[in-house]
Length: 448
Ligand SMILES: *[C@@H]1O[C@H](CO)[C@@H](O)[C@H](O)[C@H]1NC(C)=O
Ligand SMILES: *[C@@H]1O[C@H](CO)[C@@H](O)[C@H](O)[C@H]1NC(C)=O
Ligand SMILES: *[C@@H]1O[C@H](CO)[C@@H](O)[C@H](O)[C@H]1NC(C)=O
Ligand SMILES: *[C@@H]1O[C@H](CO)[C@@H](O)[C@H](O)[C@H]1NC(C)=O
Image (cartoon, rainbow, N blue to C red):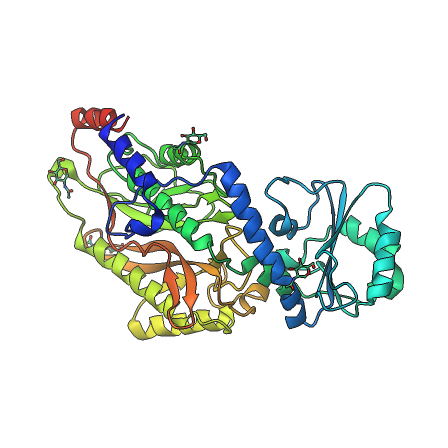
């Protein structure tokens, strides 16, 4: 075992609460509990979520929520109610959630049928007749995934089997699914922090001379390094990592740039990891020192650009109050940026159970000032958000204006503290300090 491995091993044994997690300390790769232990934890979280449902139904003046799906054509919500041992709904799975206050009080919640004979329909009809719910939510929203997961064939079958009386009582209320999925569960943050630190550890290693040799390594090499390393560390991902050399013309897109990394480049990564039903989404930047010219520090113009992006993060966190719509917060951010003389764009989104999770967004790259539907939703407290943005900054050393792109995940702490970054935020550029091939070989040996 190398010294590095011994250290990683020792750190893995330190309970989370004793270890310091701070962006100015090097990040450690963290390990999660065994899959077997994770399953117990995940089922516990699912139960907490289910216990919230009766109250959620009442909040939206609903008596029931009917979800129906077949194997491999599951409702989006199925992923938030499944047991950790289920990887797909069986046969036709029908679930009826209720408020626990009606004639169904004391019955399981949800009532659940797994059926391939059609027996579910008369039974469900019988339940509806005695329960007599007035407003039954079904996931038929046209725009919002978390309230629109009922497949069209399944909707046809429901209408046919339940008939007009019950179909007339069915309503579309996407906020039910949104709040159900987005609500943070106590206990998640402890593991989410470990995932954030691991995300940082991946970036710190990728954006260093241990992985990048200027003039040799390509942005795509680094992307695939991430993919392999994420798997090696027993995490998975929800999007292919995007590594770019930032240039004046590079706009946030679906792909990284295809470049051989050179000295003097400003690098950028956008990626996330997945584990325990949670996802991270992070963007950091790095500078490739011109070591062949004896450069020892990042040019001031690049440091200033990052500071500007940090200021935009402060503005975003400050303006993001629960109860405001995403578009209101977006406008307040853009107004404050104008006051501060900052040009840039904000496009923050909910995160957590999904990489782009349920709830209000603040901007999209292609919708900088106003977002229909998703921007008109209210921001919910007690959720996770990914604060994503860029600041334009003119870098005198390069005679170029560059978008300084950053993203960090935040969570709602409480009414007093509001939103905080889960692991702080990048305030210094990562450095690729490549000196000589000999040292590179040496450091690789030390790593392995
Ligand atoms: C609703 O009833 C079910 C079944 O009795 C029970 O498991 C669940 O905890 C109840 N939920 C609430 C919020 O009372
Ligand atoms: C990944 O999981 C396997 C199987 O549980 C385990 O043997 C291995 O040590 C884990 N790797 C890391 C880096 O935690
Ligand atoms: C870069 O590496 C060299 C040699 O390993 C070291 O002397 C120097 O301090 C490093 N520079 C920075 C900015 O870390
Ligand atoms: C900086 O760039 C502008 C426009 O791209 C160009 O007109 C100008 O000559 C450049 N200045 C220097 C000092 O290179």
